[in-house]
Image (cartoon, rainbow, N blue to C red; front, side, top):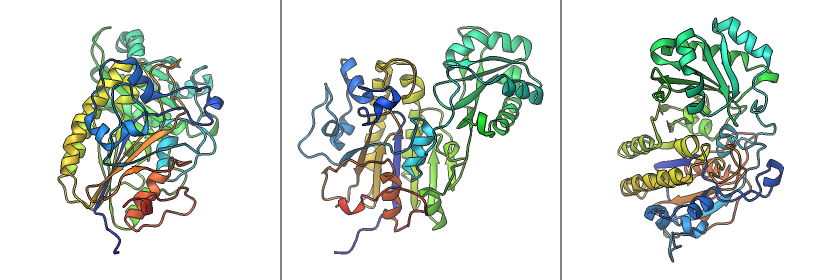
Length: 398
């Protein structure tokens, strides 16, 4: 039988949607974490009919959602082979890169005095903050001082990030970006190297009114090797990014990028792209699950965000043709019922759907996220770059 050819692959990363702790979770102090399962357990209503049809409840037991006899998609769980549990490590592994050394975090100590002194000298702004905090809390605490003095709020989180806040009216967006570019240069030193420097612009003039805007910009370390994205691009295929994918890969392997204002906006962009006759990959990150709900330990908000995603997923499914494939996955966990505000070391789901499939159902679990990139490349007959990991699942998809 002639092997089916595919025109488009859509990969949607539901940022932080873990499905149970990994086998090595104890090494990360994450025993018992289960983002999706605990969300289901902690809310009364959870309406996700499209994810249900694809087989999410067959993959992972949910209190309110029954598994169905014949799901539309293939489904499995994937464990991470890289060291770490952050955004970049997870996404890079999805596209074939195994990270051996986790990115540095400064959650407990703040950034070293030497780094802060050099950042102040180079930018001309005194640094305030320099600690781990949520984005909303740091603004309520320090934004009025920044506006009054011209100082610069620098903070971190449980991720390997250095974040700088700037009021769009008083600090100026261009100045914020300039300071972040300096910070990125400084944090390329091995002892200070963070995965991302993030510009966090906001508006408002007093506590209780501050709101972060969509002009966020991430300055990421470039991938240390070639990925599935490079392989696809080199063969002349479209590699379209939606959300922070372009930032995570520092533009490497991307042919066209779309910035998203929210996860809802990201899905609306993806639906619009489904009306375009491109040939290649559309790679989507939906960040609100992690940023707005996981880190803030808000199970209710996370569940409602999944419902909003499910609604738009239904629209996208209608637009897909028989030569399209959809993969839904995640990059790590962030259990909103767990202690602290950190990511959690979990397995992630993989749902693979096409109207052209004649089969569906459970696939064997994989020991790496890289099955996603390897499968995407294989669907287009593209070899994965040298040095990557992961085995394609294509032969199991009928």
